[in-house]
Every structure is written in C-alpha cells, then in structure tokens.
Length: 113
Length: 109
Image (cartoon, rainbow over all chains, first blue to last red):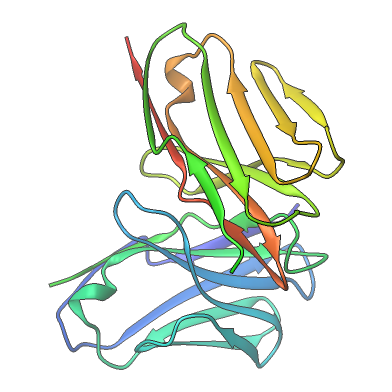
C-alpha cells in the first residue's frame, strides 16, 4: 500500500531564515505531487504541483520554491522566511491524473517568529 | 474563474442531530470529491461522485451530486462526536482540483 511521509512535523523558524520541507511517497511510481498551505482555520491553498521529476508548476508567486529531485520526493524551500509563511504545509499525491483523488501527508506546522 | 463555494462555513449541532453541508460550482464539474479533516489532522479522502444525480452512502453519511453536476451535498444522520472536523468538497478545474473553503462541524454533547 502507498504511504506518504512529511518531515519535520513541526518547525519554529525566525524571520529571514531558510526553509526546507520534505515529502516522500512509498509504494507507487510516478505519482503527481502537490504542496498546499493551510492558514489557521482556513481552506487549502495549492502552492505547487509536479507531474514528474524536474517538472514543477507554480500556482502562487511568492518566496517559496519547490523541487522534485527524485520520482517520489518533493521538497518545499524558501531562502528567507516571512511572518506570512506561517501555516500548515501539506503534501499530497495522486496517481492517475492531477484532477484525481488526492492523498495527503500528515503535514508540517510551521511557525515563523 | 471557476469557484467551488461551500455553505455553511460553520455549523454547531447537538449530538444526535443531523448535519448537511452544501457545495456549489459556477461551472459543470466532471466529478466532485469530499474530504474530511479532523482537528489537528490532515484532509482524508471520503468519496468521489461522477454521475449526474448520483447518491452514495457511507454508513451515516449520504453524498449527492446534482443533476446539473454543479452542486453537491453531504448529509450526516444522527451526528456523533467522531464526526467533528472540517468537510471539504473539491472539483476539477483544468489540470488541478479546487477545494471549497470547508464547513467546520462542531458537536455539542
């Protein structure tokens, strides 16, 4: 069966520091991968998605970037965090298409101080 | 652009009462998906509806897809404390899915 991992689970970072969040999927090949951000008590904002290694689509222009160095690995990064980057970051995967059912990881809670 | 609107934003019900959340799209959807997010947790896929007028049931949960494929509903019969959470609908837009803002369900004991 497929599993999705995210780490770290929680993170507290100062403003201006770099960020690297990692997501890996097990038990499947060539998944579509997604990064979402959820502000406290709010909906899901799609940040990036990828349909293959090295292929990244950006939905929201901001100081975040994403990379997919391996088939089942998706990384979210920032060179300098802003206060507004605080939130719950969720990685998800789907198999047959980017409009198909998505399966979410446990998420990373990021607090920028 | 295409939006997926959900109402209500919040709902408080007494345990044992029924609950319904509604999802409306400005355009026809090829499918509608429903997810549940428990407090402090991550969204979990519940169900996908594809056919016009489709009705599916999962125990106390009943999902409907409108005849015009522009609206959907989730109805919970006799709510329990385990039903607490936020329920999201989602529909395809071009090459991705768009999530509604969710309905947060609170259960009063």
